[in-house]
Image (cartoon, helix red, strand yellow):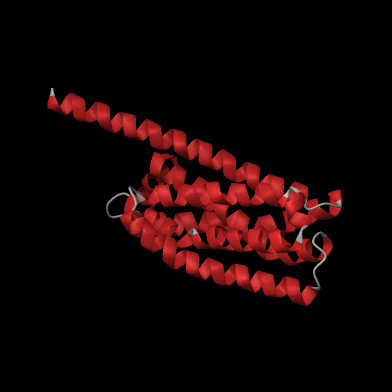
Length: 213
């Protein structure tokens, strides 16, 4: 009975500003990560004209860049002014990379390889600082539940995004729509997260002023 009584209170965490930012950033970035794993080789073969073997090596390079990013970005978040700033930086970098893929650069092999490596660094490397941000932003005594809840939402995206992107690619015959959907999703999540971040900062300042008066 006690567990049942606590469950509604824990689920109300979904509406808290910090959890909204966690969900939005996590869902959009895990969607990008899933899209990269599914579409990178296909894009490089069909659009940039690489052989399947060469395209696979580029995917490996992107994943290695992601490993480096998880370490490097997490280390940077230790020194940045707030871990969410690092996550937002990853979102901006991902949007820029996806936008570049939709230009003629996405069909030029050297540029496409560099873009996918860039996307690997930020589109996979985001996870380290994001997990740290979840742990730090969770309400006191609810860190485990908040982390589990956020990862559960991410897992839903992991299941749904790859087939949806693949279907979109097959229906349109182009990689531009899937990349555009991911870019728009990330941009919307970034905009909402930034507005909530700004609103939270203003509220904190007003609270300090009221307290000092």
